[in-house]
Length: 131
Image (cartoon, rainbow, N blue to C red; front, side, top):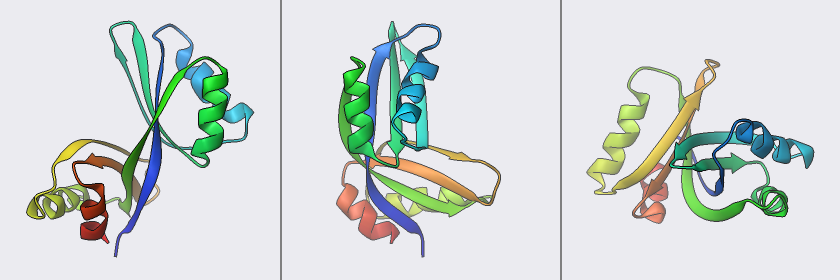
């Protein structure tokens, strides 16, 4: 049995400039919100951050108060064992269920688990498939 949840991901748009990662993540720290997942990238002159947090409502409010553009997305998070092939199994399960993955990202801290974040064309079906 996998540890699967539907969670809120925050998409934060900010100026792409030196120090922006520290300012965005510092905003969360200053209001006591823990970061659980992060994807950051630059597109033209915009910094894009996908954040999974311990308190998305509080994080959204704090980030908006700093002037950042914030939108919410429903995503699926899967906590899996850190082992060869575990991610492939998740992909195969969703593929066999004919669920298209729009994007995903994940991380391992080398402590036995991996957090994978998935946005699919059918999160409800993906949640049911992976449980």
